[in-house]
Image 1 (cartoon, rainbow, N blue to C red):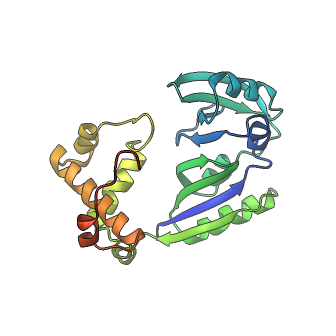
Image 2 (tube, one colour):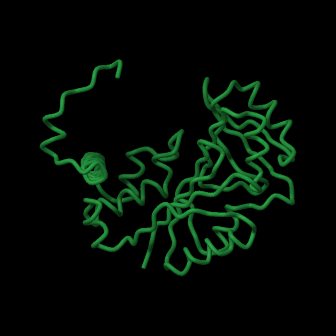
Length: 224
C-alpha cells in the first residue's frame, strides 16, 4: 500500500547547519533529481554574494557551482564533504522516493512516497541510526479512502502525483502543461480543469471550508 510520509529532520549533521550558520536568513529547496557529484539546491534569503560567501565558509561544503538563477533565487550544485551524511541517499536506499525537499528554517522537510508502510519505518529507523532525530509530521495511505478524505478523486490524485513526478510544480518548471497532458494522454483543457478541481478539493478539505464559503468570500485586496 503506497504511503506518503512528511518528515522533518534537523539540519545538524546533514551539512546544512554550517551553511545556515554562515547565512542565517537562508532558505533552501532541493530539486528531486540528485546529481552524480552533489545536490541541486535552490538558495535564497540573501544576496548572491552573501550566499556564495556562506558556501565558501561552510566547512561541510567541499565544492559548489552556479547552474542558473533569478534576481532573488539561485540554483547551485553543492557537493558536501565525504563525512557528511547524505539523508537523500538514506531515503533512496530504504525504498523511498523524494517528492520534494525544502529547508526554510535550517531543518529539512521531506515529502517521501513509499510503497509499503514498512519502508517508512525503515527510513525513520535508519535516520535514527545515523544520529538524526526525525519527526513524522504526517503519514497517510494513498488508498481510495484516503483520496476521499482529502477531497480528491482517484484521477485527480493520479494527475497530481504525475505532475509532481514530472517536475510541473518545480521552479522553474521541468515540464509544460502541454507536455504533461501528452504524457497523460488527455487534452490540455481537460488537464487544466482537473488540476483546478484538485486544487479546490485540497483547499476546501485542508481549510475545512465549503465550496459555497469560498465562492462567497470577498476577493482580497492586492495589498493583502
